[in-house]
Image (cartoon, rainbow over all chains, first blue to last red):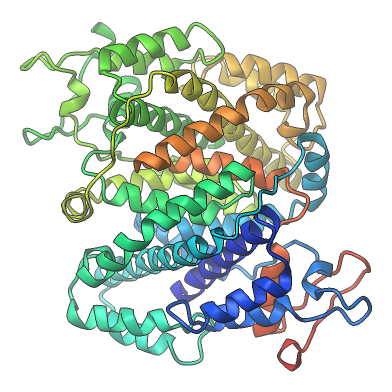
Length: 284
Length: 284
């Protein structure tokens, strides 16, 4: 089931990068196909990147133009991505990249409304930038790692809750065989989990930290380029927010706890002593 | 129930703006309290903004420093925000701002892990910018409208599905009385829904379009400022992606449909003719 959540995330991340490069930065389908094919020869090698390259040059029989341009932009779903998010919500595990992918599909279904809003508000803007291809490639790899980190985190929690006795390195191995998400990254992750079988989180592994340290700046550049152009990148942006929040020693959740205690006397914990506390804030 | 989803969104959006201004742009708590108090005199007027201003100057009895700085940054939840996201997932309605707020609370709970990752990766950076306060105010209002738009969209869909006979203007009126989300915006929304009782979506209303048209650029600036500093703004970024996707006449969901048809023969629809189609992509 988590496999399908990651699959949704992987597909959405690829779709966002395609969207940004094509409609935001002026890359034509044939050039994009060549780009994805080149990407498929290195760290991004995966079944989904490979088929994306092939899709982008597949012609419509009638017009000879790319068939993808004739396909209605409504992504359907059979519910398996949604189940991952639902399970994550119940276990209290954040999987924002996977969730953003599920919500992006639901949003795409509002096609009639979108067309009306497009005339009302105007759409995205294009600003050609050949250098964006390389930033996007590195951003995609970083975001993909963050999506897998979320998926493995969910599996780890479910395993601890229910005692499945999962071995994450074995799971990474199984996913390389015939699964839709098969990818070179899974070989890396298999090795990572084998070296850290009890690791609490993928981001703690030094080899992953080294890879992310190099690529997060490109993720930041890519998200900024998309947002400046009005190209929606919900899954890329959610991946960046996940990284920035997970490596934060102090989140504004303290303010949220204060608000909850103010209006509902829900109490709060303190950093400097044990116990639950309540304050009569209105008397301040 | 949707009330609580919006409440989660509202609280998270305020928390993100607070976080950006305080730790990203150098605003001290007393200055922020004065800022929120000023905001509470205009379009952002609301119970949650009012109590935020009061919280930020409430002193810890022992040290005299702001009590909020002693509160553990782990936001708890009783599940009501989660139910909204779960209902939205089942009805296929995208509510990404509300969902991001729920996931942000779950993420905050990983405090031990966050502290470890903070030493490993380093944290956010600060770059003072007094002008950011005004952009943040306008961004907060835009994002709040987008959060309400999502909540009302969910209500509308649930109403149609289950035949509650909801009147959205009446609901907006009810929420102004004693509810945690009571706010001046609800008076505006009440008038909007009264003028457009059968409106499909809040973003279609001309008065809302005018307000958003003026404030979306500030939302873009604010999100970019946070991401450049490494301050996580999942709910603000999700609001921006929601706007950009909802006003897009062509989403990369077409590529996702092509991928689904490639690997699973799930078929696709075309823009130019009726019916379901399948392509033998691998033979291209």
